[in-house]
Image (cartoon, rainbow, N blue to C red):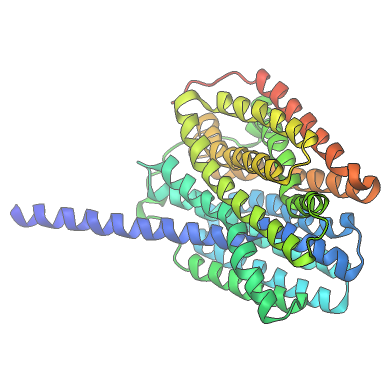
Length: 418
């Protein structure tokens, strides 16, 4: 009897140790994938080096986010069949290949190949990789789902910090600004890191034998008014935020140049990279903060607060010409942007149950696809056509999107938590 009492705690300790390794691996995978959020670091250099328009270059980021969401929806359906490791490995390989194809595209000056490589191939890799660790970590931590899923998706928010302040500047210095080589080396680093993390992912042994919830039919839920409301709320929050993510560096550089006309390109680029890094921290923290707050006040109330306060932030962005205030407001928007991703998994779980969580959450992420096209393309088109007034108009569109999301959220009845 005493021997059994000793063995049980040892087994529990080993299981807890193993599951934290799974959580760390999931966070590392998301950290590598989240480097896509540093796209604005490359937006201006690509426009200036290759003579492409802002809208043309921005399509690369838009395609990446579009196919991310679509692939995540497919991945949510395929996850129970193939398991997390195979799906994550496939995503990591495609993600790294997207960078390498982008390097070839830049070497040959092919904009179309850049869209196909970084946008389509890399985006599919992003989607397959993104949905996997979130669902897997939740299975390992039935007692700490909110904490661990928040930790994992926070890794994605910090990815831009890794790319903009560490990987891209270091590679730029090593390769003397040669963008094809920078992209190839960056793909090796983030794709390789994602692959190593993917090899550590697996489901707990009991996950396949003790289903938590009877899933029931999926299609009626996808066609329900409740799903449509969640999708629209998520879309509006993402579209406004991702427009800033895609152009925060060029927009800040424009403001800084007006304040300090003597500033050279290197200083302006450094300022833009710093904003990307700092805002990515807020993006990551927001996933924890708002997700935790939603446990206390409810998911609908949390989204209403995020949407309403962001409207004020976008109005402030329209009015300010101060780069410091601009940076602060961008950081708040990214705090709420990350909050949407931190809150929505629990929202879906509350509404549709754990059995439908991977499928329904994957389908909800198609809102990310749509927003990834709408948000950056609006800003890019305005920047190409309106010059100095582009920022003001862009923020006005963002405020309108958020106001639409707020109105939609008023139609959603707060749900009683289970």
